[in-house]
Amino acid sequence: MPVNLPQLRAFLAVVDTGGFSAAAAELGISQSAVSHAVAALERELDAPLLVRATPARTTALGERVLPHARVALSAVRDVARVAADAAGASTGTVRLAVTPSVGQGLIPGLLRHWGEDQPRITVRVFEGDSAEVASWLENGTADAAVLVDPPPGPGVQLAVDHYGALLRRDHPLADEPAVGIGELADDAFLISPKACEARIRAIHRAAGLPFTPEQRVRDPATLVGMVQAGLGVTVLSEVSRSSIPSDLVLVPLRPRTSRRLVLTGPQAGSWHPAVRALAESAAGHLARDVPRQLAGPDGAAPRPAGA
Image 1: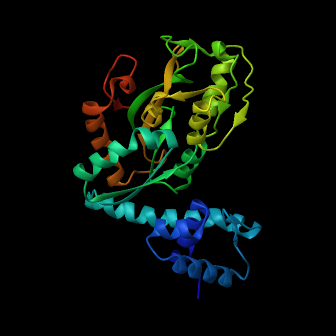
Image 2: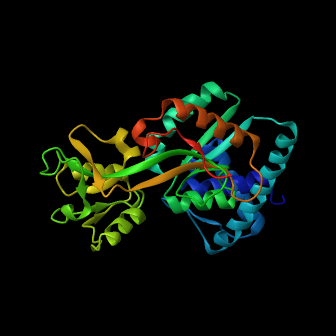
Image 3: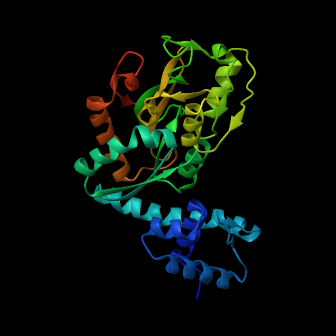
C-alpha cells in the first residue's frame, strides 16, 4: 500500500500530541486506528518512525520524514482553503495555537462566543510556548494563532496584557500599588518557560539585574503552587489572573511592562475564510466584553493590528 494522507495525519498527530492515545482523541478515531496507520506507514517505508515511549518521539528517519509530512498535509489544507475561499464559506475546522496563559485567560470566553456566533466553525485549540505556537503557524500545523508581540501585519489585537509580581497575600509587598523587579531580589525567583520567560529575562536585563531563577518548572500551574507554598515569587501576565487563587495577589510591575496578544492567520499566503470570520467575530466580541485592564493602556477596545 503506498503512503497515504491518513497515515501521515496519524504520524503527525502522535508527534504533535506526544502519544497514541492523545492523537486518537485529536483525530476523533480509536487508538487502534492510529497505531495501525502509523504501523502501515512504517511498513511502507521499511523502518520505524517513532520511538514508543512517553512521550513518543521521532527516530532519526522520523525526524527527516516529519517536515515532508507537514508539507503534504499543509498542501491538502491549502486546496480546501482555496475551494472555501472561492465559495466564500465560513465553515470547517480551525486549528488554533495559543500559549497556556492565553488559553486560560482569553480562549474560554472566545470559544463560547464563537460557538454562538460562528456555529458552523469548529475550533481545535493547541497549547505550546511562544516559539512552538509561532512555528506551528509557520509550518501549517495550525491555521491560526494568538501571537505575542508579532511584527506589523494582518490580525486582530485581542489585548494589551500587563505584567505583575505574583506574591502571597502575607508578603510584605502584597499591598503595594506597584513593585519594581529589583524589590523582589530578596525572594527566590521562580520561572516557567511557558510563562513568558524570555520577556521576564528582558525585564531583569533592562533593570540591570541578573536573572538567576531558583527553580524552573514547565507547568505554570506548578509555578503558582510553589508561590502558594512560600517557595518564592514570580512574574505573570494579567491574562493569567483567572487562574490565580485567592491567597495570592498580582501586583503591577513598575515601570509598567506589557505585551500585545494578536489573533492572526499565516503571515504568508491567504487565510481560510473561517479564520477571517473568527478574527472579525473576536474583534467585535472583545470590544464589548474584554476586561478594561486587558483592553489597552488607555482602556481602548481591541482593534485590527496592522493592515
